[in-house]
Length: 487
Image (cartoon, rainbow, N blue to C red; front, side, top):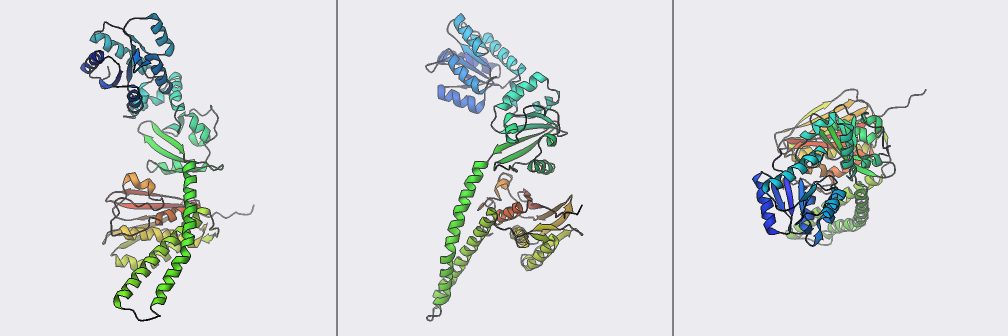
């Protein structure tokens, strides 16, 4: 018999409430008391109790009516109705509503516990345990491989009421369950997917990349783009002994808001350029109209430094806006290893200044790629500079450039402070900086956003693997150029 299941008591009679609570707690059940209709709704929504015990009248409303409203959201939740006297009319209403049963006085502790346990056993037989137990542990999902057809239908009913797309795969990547939201997202038929390989059913390049990335680690953020403009964020979670679960959420509206914000930032940044140039020009002219004392010269230097800093920020914003708008159309054949070696040579003085060692592993005979050499150089410069800023003196920065299956894979690893797990999904956002960035490390929070936009414009992928106090490794995967051979 289960213990520690939560029973929600919604009764107006204080004496009866105490009786019920004592009887349940004596059998190791947890109890929660709803003081009114609002509290009842909140507890049902947030705690999802194992069973609800409702008075025939509660908070001025009919208990059966309240129970029906609960069942609309939680169709298999067991609900018992307590009435002051036995009534055939009430009993029929309870049966018609699909409730678990009725309780009448006189009541003994055994009567209360017996009714609760029978209701919970019936609920578990119907698969109701899935709703409660899956929140605490995935162990119950180990039975997934041996589900009967009836059980599958019950689980599919639960999944069908979830707004996010959900798909459960076995260890071989075959589909076990898929809800309606997932079918709608990928325009799939309602039937014919059970037991088939997922890539045979979902033929989408971004989804295929998701599965490839997921072989290395669980994923919380992966965008799936559709030709009609919809954008979904996908999460991949492995389930030990079962397979994996993939969920997707429609974030198209968030992307639209981000585009509007980007347009606004671009307009403001463009309009700032001219006055900043004027301010910088006049600071140069001040000294030519007459002699300046030392304090005036110091103030002018500070003005010049501040204006140059703001100008640099404006230029970065305009760069990012051009990339996001797709205005950088210049593409040519590029050998990325040459661009990387040039970037490493340029930053060699900075490595020495920070007392950093550089270890590189650049494969020979790398394939060519098609891209914008200026932007690719900017991408590599930003990642290498980023590693240089955060790597402690005396440590080593590891750089790798390899090729695999018509893909060029670049990585740069440092031994810096790392990035908290909860923040790794946001570091490519504009102006975002991790909470553990040392105060002495300056930056606008735009470098990685620019890097991601460059990678996206080259149909590539970028991600980070990091742990606090153990450093960070950034990975960039870009497609190699495959020339069309004459037939």
